[in-house]
Amino acid sequence: MTMTPDEAQWFAQAVTQIVANVGKAVLGKDREVRYAVTALLAEGHILLEDAPGTGKTQLARALAATVAGTSKRIQFTPDLLPTDVTGVTVFDQRKGDFEFLPGPVFTHILLADEINRASPKTQSALLEVMEEGQVTVDGVTRKVGRPFMVIATQNPIEQAGTYRLPEAQLDRFLMKTSIGYPDMAHTVEILSGAAVKNRSSLVSPVIPADKVAEMADLATTVHVADAVLTYIATVAQQTRASEQTRIAVSVRGALAMTRTAKVWAASQGRPYVTCDDVKDLAHQVWDHRLILDPEAEFAGVTAALVIDRVLAEVPVPTTGITP
Image (tube, rainbow, N blue to C red; front, top):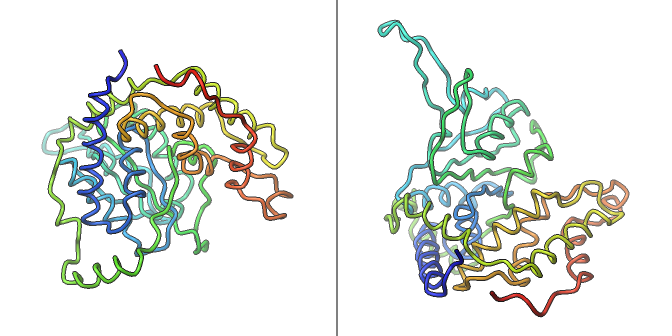
């Protein structure tokens, strides 16, 4: 079953409404908000690499409020334990039995603030839930429900007391982007409303959480032609063939692009994916998956430059795109 044009138009209107609503709390960042909404509807997670005070917490809270969901925040620190993330089983003396106390992961939107400050052992506590939507504690597996998204943040400047995210952890993030500072006009607007400490409190629900899960299911029916799939696979393969990369786009990375491009196309009102969708998302979906050769990195090469070069070299198919 393939998404119909009417369904695509409804999907696009719903996404526009969600983005506009979240935009009440995160001013002037419609494209960045759209990336976050895309990750949510693709049932993926997003990593925000930003300086403090750019609205990352507001984004998570506003997105949860918009979809009538719950949000929780974990401040990652060096002494944080895995059980502080997933939950713990304790013995209840009154009941004479063991009881599971769920951790913060049991929510719709989880803000993992400064994730690189926690030890690798604690970071890895998120691997299972990010990949499979479930948590296993003391041999018992529990689902976290739908929708579920991790919005993780890390400070790109301050590196003291931090642990670099391993490649396996980075690969779990569907997208990586940054919010950045607002422009002058929106900064003035934010300052004029300084009395409101929590701008996400201004956001009212516009869509129920279960409807978000339905939208995610609908997005999987977007048509992706063989020509576009071949284009995605070729670009991924070319990043592996580059002498400037040590680790390139994996099969998981190519699958992530396919899932994300489906949502992106539907959010534009199209029931099919084009190669332009892939180009629009290439840096957000693929840059963080590349590990550069040390010599290339020393020479000033960046992951973005590698992706740009590969996109320029791989021919774009002109036929066989539409269903």
